[in-house]
Structure formats: structure tokens, C-alpha cells
Image: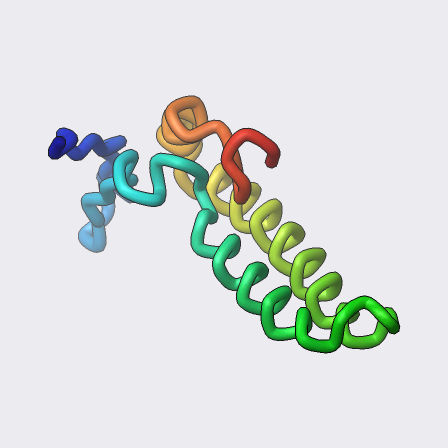
Length: 105
């Protein structure tokens, strides 16, 4: 049942004395989507507001705001990583095609 852990290997700033060896993990939750850790955060916010039922919009403002914020942050993080890591980030994105929700976005 154990799966072999896979990585996208990259040496950042190879010609610099501050070079760093980076590994982008493909297995675990990072193999489902690049920002999978946002899903439980959004779900926790939703379940926090469910006891208010659906009588009014205000309790759900936090969930909607958080969802928009995290989806925008995922987009900005991907853009920044694409600029920083170049072809290695593209290889990682080919292996893990979804940003937040596997199969949707």
C-alpha cells in the first residue's frame, strides 16, 4: 500500500554561493493539488458558520471572503513560483495540474 515518493528536483541559483537544492514533492497531499492545504481551511470556515443556518447572508460572508482570498493567493503564488523556478515549476505543474481543488481548479 505504500507508494514511492516522487520529487521534481531543482537546484536554485546554481552559480551562487547561496545555492539551494529544492525538491517539489509529488506525493502526499501535494500530489493532489499544489495548494491542497487551503481546502480544509475553507471547509473549517464553512462548518464554523453552518450553525447559523441559511437565514441570512452575513454569517457566510467570512467563508466567501476567505475562498476568494485563498484562490487569489494560490494564483499569485503560482505566478511567483513560475517566475522564480522557471522550467522546473512548469514540470511540477505538469505533474500536479490543479491549484487548489483536485479535478476542479
